[in-house]
Image (tube, rainbow, N blue to C red; front, side):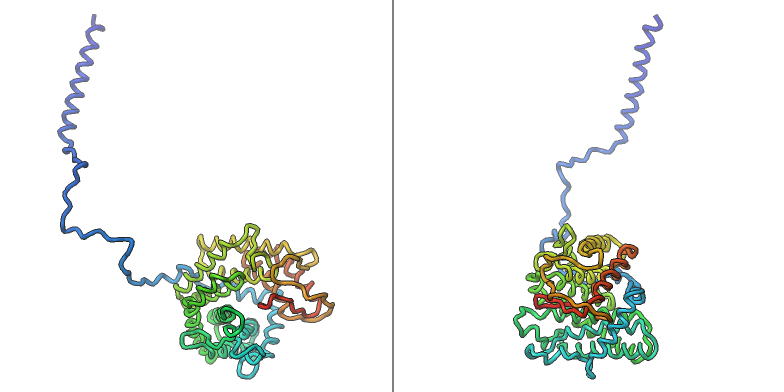
Length: 409
């Protein structure tokens, strides 16, 4: 009997307790808000902002590390490394010897190509400055003096806005003279970036470097905002020419801290990477060119060397690695470069065996391989390849490559 009557009592007690607790909870719970009837909006609340036509905001200067890494890049240690050191110490004085007393090269004016100047010829001063950086004493002062004189001559032909109105590229069949101007600007930026990070041997030389930096900045700013640039980027088929622009802007930004130039350079590099083929080809005239692939890779490498750690630097690294491997696939076991389907560079007949230094046309591709090997931290694999390419080239006389009429260095 107890078992039959205790169960209903227990249930009754439980229900009574639950009822009491529910009543207490309900009494503590605030009244329900009728969300389907929203509260009245205070008339003092400002009207809705039209985000399709936002108001002009004040320009806020980005911190200088937004797209620009602090400190020095690898250029100083690269120049002193085995191989590059010997090449620059040969080519730098050789280029200095050809400089005329007022600081210009013979090809910069009166070369039978119409009126005006060819300011891009002055970019050979980078070899002179680089050789000066690994020299010492009176020879360093001499080379720095001559290299700066070449850049000073070039900037003396800049207009009030930083453009180069007398550049003769604009008076020939070329649609735009922006390419030769960009080559000069990049060369000047590269050299001034190197010099501004070093202690100069004399106050006078330092003053000349300091005086050139505002001129470089003005010309780079003109290039970044010129109508020529928009048209040039729209029709350019040769990526190396685009890379001169982007790298020159970034190197100038590194010197001056100008974030506008750095952001413009970033947008251009993004467009280049977007066009890179899956096999690593950086297109020239719609396809792979063995020689110009190395031009684009060196310039992209110099851009990469200025970037701080982060996702964007990693993206550029991956593009560099892919493009470098594509080029290395053309190197034969004996150091010969073989890419018969190159879109722009073709042989100029049989080469003739010879001994002795051959100059920058033979040295430039091995130099780029050495530079990329250090930049990509792949020296164990790549330096022997660079040495083979150089040794193969040194077995021949100085050779001028046959190009499509727009030769580079």
